[in-house]
Length: 165
Image (cartoon, rainbow, N blue to C red; front, side):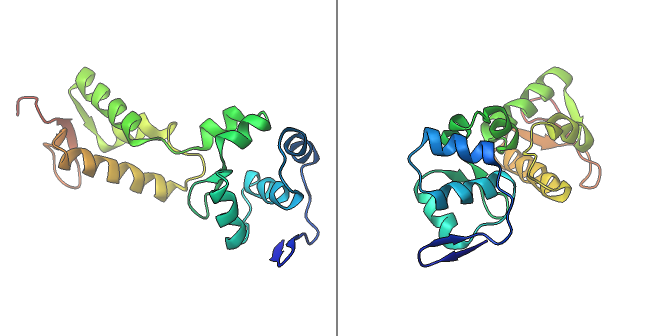
């Protein structure tokens, strides 16, 4: 698939007919946008100019290469559950999960935190990206004064910052 001055060119692409038909029936989108959304839905790349256009129309979200259709498109195509599974876990929810865990069990190792958040992280992320996401969350919580590490850097044991040392 490539972008041209007058739209999108498809080179031997297989289009999900049911998905495309639903989008065409429930929206007033041009065929070029529908075909690009079909590619995003399949996890395939689309040209940068089409990415900008679909973002501006609020039809896609996420960062390349992990673009996903926006809630409006998921709703129009009856793929709401897939949207929820694919979207990233927001920091507020992740923070609450970690704080709840530490409130109930006092401490957690990095493995405990990984296990806690494993099913909640976006299915679009690779294993190393998930690990970085958890590390960034823990760093943010530590810097915000919510948690502290009473273990070592290589073997952290996290606890709530307001708990006795």
